[in-house]
Image (tube, rainbow, N blue to C red):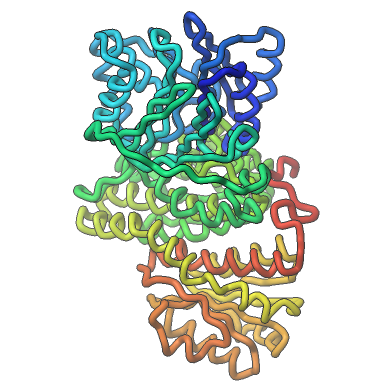
Length: 609
Ligand code: AGP
C-alpha cells in the first residue's frame, strides 16, 4: 500500500509533494521519490523514511511547479533506490500504488521488444508502455489510456511527460485515488490527508476513471471507452489527523475495516479458479521437494502464532504431512529435532521479531529448509528465510494485529492448497472448491462487519467484566485464543482462550455471572459439541456471547448476546469468525478509554528477546 501524489499549479511542486508524502507516510516508508518537469524531468529518490528524501532536496533543491511523488510500501522488488518510484523511462515518469498481475508477461514482451529495465518493480512496465506510445506522437492522456488496456491488476498511477510540462495524467483501478481542486492548482493523491492543507474540495475517482489535470482544470474520462464523465466535488470536513485514519477514530478500527481489501490483495494474482491451482510465488515447492519432507514446523509469536495454529489444520488436511506449531521463543531453547527433511515456516507481520528471527536461524543451522510469511518486504525475517510469501496487508499501524492476522491465515490457506495440489493430495475439483470459498471471504468479512454494527451495545453490557473466557474447537480454537489476546492487549481486561473441550478439565470453575464466556460456534464439524459446552456455561449462570451463523435462530436463543456472521466453510470460518471478536475488543477498549493504537507496555514490533 504506497502513497502517491501529483501537483500542477504555481507553487514549488517539491514542497507540496514532500509535505503531502509526509501525510501519507503511514501508507509505507521503504523509500520515497519525486519527479518534477522543468525543461526535462528532474528525478530524486531516497531509500528509507521520507526524511532522507527531504534532506536530499534541501541540499539540492529541484524547482518547478508540476510534479509527482511517491512513498513506497514494497510489494515487488526490494526497498532499494532503483526500485523507488517515480520510474522514469524516456520522456515519461510514473508513480504507482497497486499490483500489476500480468507484470511478468508484459515485462517479457517489452524486453523482447528491446526495452531495458532498470528496476525489479512491476510499476516500470507502465513507464515503458506509456513512453513507447508518446514517442509515436500520441498525447500523454491517450498513451495512458492505451496502457490501461494492456495492464491487469490494481493500480492508481500519476504520470508526467517531459514534452507536456503543464499536465499530470492519472488513472485508477482498484487502488484509491482522489483529485484535489484548488484555485489555479490541481492535486491528485492516494488519500485525503496529502492535500487537506491546500484544499477541502475533493473528487473521488471511481475504478476505470482516468483524468487529465492542468492548473485550472481537470477532465475525467472512462479509460475503457474514452467517454468523458463528470464526478461530483465533495467538501471534506475532516481534520488532518482524522484524515490519516480515514475518518476512523483509531488506526486499529481503520485496519479492521481494511481487511476485505487486504485479503483480496493477498489472494490477487495467486489463484486459478479454472485449474484449482495456487501460484504462491516466493514459496513454491515441487511435489518432489514436498515428498521429501517428514515434518513441517511453523514458528511465530503472539497473533502470528495463532495464525500458525490455523495453518496447521489447513496444511495437514491438505497434505497429510505432520505439522507442528511452536512459539518461536520456546522453539529455540528446546534443542529442536530439525533436519533436512523438515520445512520450518516463520510467520511475522513485521519481519523483525527477534525470537522468530533467532528461531529461524537456529532451524537453518540445524539444516532445515526454511520459508516465511511476512508483511514487510525486505525485512530481516524475509531476507533470512529465502522463500517468502508476502501478505499484502499494507502497513499495520495499530499495535493490535488485525489485517495482518487475516492475511496470514489467507497466505497459509494458499500454501496448503498449493502444497496439496503439488503433492496430488488435493485434486483439481477440491482445489477449485477451496479457492472459490477463499475468494468469497472478502465479501463475507465485509458482511460480518455490517452484521455487527451494534457490537458496541454488547460491549457496554460487559464493561464491568474483569475477566473473560473465550472458547472454540478445531479451527476455531486459535480464534478463541486470538479473541482473548485482542481483548487483553487493548482493554487490559484479563481474558483466556481455551479449547472448548477443555472446559470440564478446570476452566468451568471460573464460570459465574460476572465472567462472560465468548464462544465461536459457526455451523461446522465442531458445532454440536461446542453448543454443549455453551449450554454447560449457561447452566452455571455464565453469560454467553456467541459468534454464530446469522440465520441460526436456535443458537441465538441459547445466547445472552449474539455476534452474527455469514455462513462459512470449515476452512473459511476462522477468517470470518475473528471479525466480531476484533470489534468487540475494540469497542470494550474504546469505552474504557485505553490507548488503543499504542496500548501500555506494548510495541508494534518486539525486536528484543
Ligand atoms: C498482536 O496483536 C500483537 N501485536 C503481537 O502478539 C504480535 O502478533 C507479535 O508480537 C508478533 O509480531 P510479528 O507478527 O510482527 O512477528
